[in-house]
Image 1 (cartoon, helix red, strand yellow):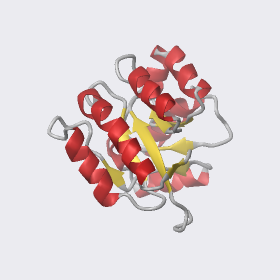
Image 2 (cartoon, protein in one colour):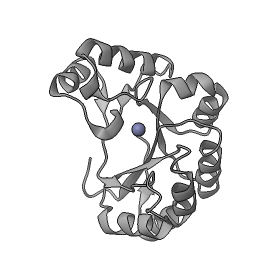
Image 3 (cartoon, rainbow, N blue to C red):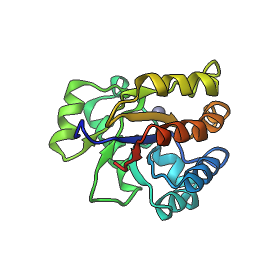
Length: 186
Ligand SMILES: [Zn+2]
């Protein structure tokens, strides 16, 4: 990433699901900014219409495994099966974007993913939006403090995050715009 380029990347993990994802999509559409969704395959299977909507609205998509599994709890082959299954349901072969649940995996898993052409996407700004203590102002302060050119901002479109993410999202986007950031797609 070019450090001169004033771009940030909004990302949402753990969806899609019907309580939170549509509200987030509404805000992104109204603010005319793209985002990237790292989805749990089982949720895509359950809510294919939400998945289609995310694509139709021009966001990028990546896998977050099929069942939101931790790499430290599975063998290498079981983990890779989860990754492949999570990716297969997305039917996007051109970019194999992958974000490991919990942001962690073993070194062997990481090396295997890279060898198989996956792009591993982590983040540098963690909003903690799944935590009820992180109300909108607190999230906004994190974004203000840690965002730099090229930052990848981690949010969630899960049910657990809804009460924090939804009120924080529009002020966050508007602050980023006021600071001159453009919004990129991974
Ligand atoms: Zn997750």
